[in-house]
Length: 413
Image (cartoon, rainbow, N blue to C red):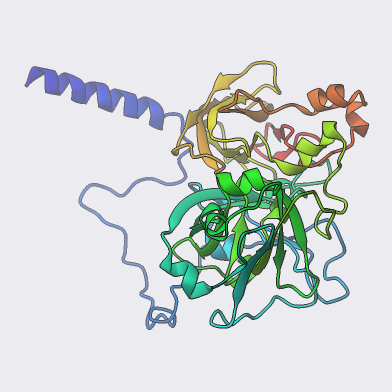
């Protein structure tokens, strides 16, 4: 009995110390009193058809830079996910980032009519219906996708503007290796070209070794069918590779013996050996989502610094936080399981003293590769920091500056 009382006193003492670090906005109800019941929602129109979110939750995607939006077709070029409002690691399907369609319209495909053909350097050409694929053994994996347009920028004001072109979802489908083994591969086959059904036939050349490792022909996302913006009824998942390789509306795969420069590859890949790796694989990369640009801390006290980390090379093994602009670093905690080629949520307990602070995060993946600072990137390319040219996907560290009044701004500006 005595030990239980001692443990309870210790818990209450630690709880009181933690609470003392918060800035409380209102007094708690007196014992025995309860808040008034809220008004009821009568006849939620979506309670049968499709669930709606609370009217008090207002996270939205935004147009992302790169080209004028809307363009000549009246379309927004890219659409960025609201990372600043994210919790956990899974991006809800309606908030997943979107890369611009190649043409004036998103394809409206009847899954009963859609076909996926695999041909080229194979023993036999095979054509699959969507139902054919669903009859095969499936796998479900958590993977991120990221567009190379994600990058640190002095002009960006929020994390949605710097990093909103990445999202993480649960994908379900058939391993591409299963389909290729069914077709049979000829000697000398070393690449494959994936093509979608958009009006402009985007295609990507991808090493065959990647196909046999972990590529996925996906028909499901977050427990339901792919949404049209995400490639319904089929899309190719190329875990860890730049987003443009994840071909939407997948209709054709050709097995070949060489690299082909296609529409998707123009301007995205550099065949120079030193730069090629930066055009294929993402990360390691992390970013603080709270506190981040445009947010406001109400006052000094306890906060959890929270963010996301990911790597195209595998799982995240370590995340470190600096609150003094990189002068010192301390380990954050991983708040979610660390899966390969997936977002990992991290957190760091921070007691803000009300003084100006510069927050930064850096991660290390399972291969031991660490996320670089902008200065380290500049040193690698032997260029001035202010003029360093981004090649491939930018994975440099994004700082956020917390002012003494609690406002948060881009630390690069």
